[in-house]
Length: 211
Image (cartoon, rainbow, N blue to C red; front, side, top):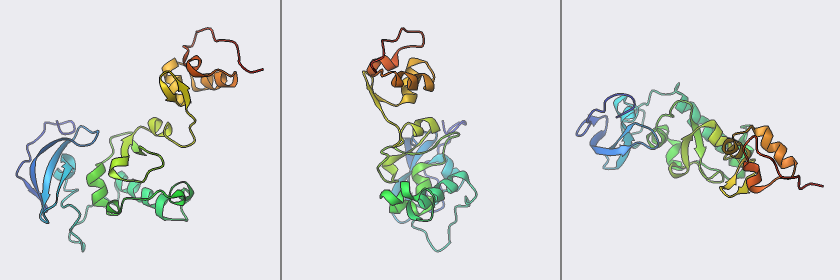
């Protein structure tokens, strides 16, 4: 399947400066089919089927001089690409101190929008771009599309609490316990730690460890 429709075999097709060599699994964490392509310059890389069919990616990024345009300046993914660069490169950006100001950079390959799009694809509905290592740079290996909740759990501001299920944020603990965020905060205020934080809603809590 490529997206929601029936997958079409694109092997051998010539699209822009790219020739499709063969199917190469699924693209990142999406349901889009991925295709191994060879650019006229000789470089081979994998592109998602949607981008190929829509003409969003027509080369490996080697074609310059305005001969090829992506036509996506108004697309959400283009806005996210621009925002990523601004956070890392523009000292006047209000978020620069949390990104470029502390050494977070953008992979030079991603300075070209077509390369960024080829690596990340368009974001599935409801997902935002997340760096897997929050102290790492914006690169293909360190970025993925994630839900806002998952991304919030990966911020530097989140303190993780040790449990038998590993270090967890308050939101993750609340999900496991089946209680609200504020309930876990209250347990922490009472001095509870470890698996006592994971107790279900109607469990009898141990006595407070605070004096």
